Amino acid sequence: MQYAAPGTEWNTYGDGVYIASSPLGPYAYAPNSPMSYKPGGFINGAGHGSTVAGPGGQYWHFATMAIAVNYKYERRIGMFPTFFDRDGVMYANTAFGDYPHYAPTMPEKKGAFTGWMLLSYKKPVTASSNLEDYTPDRVTDENVKTFWVAQDNSPRQWLEIDLQAPATIRAFQINYHDYKSDLYGRPEGLYEQYVVESSLDGKTWTTLEDRGHDKLDTPNDYVELPHAIKGRFVRFRSLHVPTPYLAILDFRIFGNVAGDRPALVTGVTAVREKDRRNARVAWDPQPECQGYNVQWGIAPDKLYSSWLVYGQKSLSIRSLNVDQQYYFAVEAFDVHGIGTQSAIIEAR
Image (tube, rainbow, N blue to C red; front, side):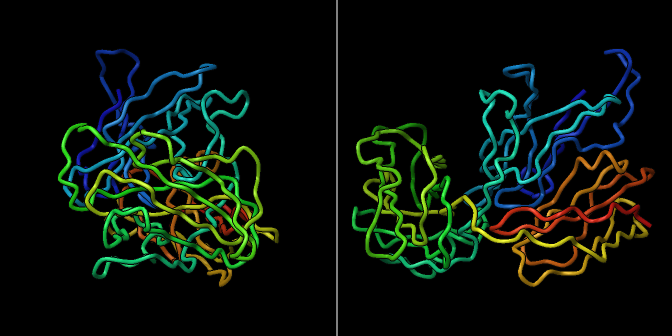
């Protein structure tokens, strides 16, 4: 029996599950609840959801994700592959859940992570203009609650990101923001138009996507390129937005950079606090990596929960079940890929 936990506006917003041998119960709390949980990364929360069977019998959990800037219940919809393991334990895989994954229509790959990493994180950004302190660096901070605002909504507004090294670009995502939009329902003229280009030298540009003739409302537009493109600079040129200002949460670019993946994470510790719902996980930091994916679960082969963090060397997890034993592991990642998972440890 799946249920939605409250706290829509918080990053710990999620869905849990009870189990029984009969629809009428009695029910017991599943040992790995919450089964849908995404407290880290670009956008948080995975609650008030529904689980359905998709193509090929693959289950998917559709959940709402919190923005909570204009209003505490402001949300978007997330989609995560969901599984029942050999012991019947139900879980939604939210690891790297806002990075590109294969669609339900891809045989043998549906729901799997593509391995395309975030190239744009904290990279230098220039822009045509900005309003007040809504500066362009906010479009690469991997935070759905911050945003850049241009001085107006005219076609002369643009963004340019320097990836600082030649990269293999596979996809991008433009996340618009409703800054002072005063839009309700679906009024006429609700669409976005833009052009995205890339360049190796900042002088000669190749068009990656031209949406200059589309009239679709795509506030979180994700575009996968038909083939990989080598580039260092990526430029966004706005042509039309339905809002009084052009405002963008993040301009996210995905792909890979040639080089070695991060090393094995060492020095992992996990200590339960006096309040057994809480645990402190720490590890030896790797100066060159981008971030870490912290995993935990009720057994060494059931690390179904995860929390993606950037630039940290410890994490306080406050969503555990009091009487349940947990196991933890950490893996580092950067533009080259995901490193080898650390040793799995039992929390003390």
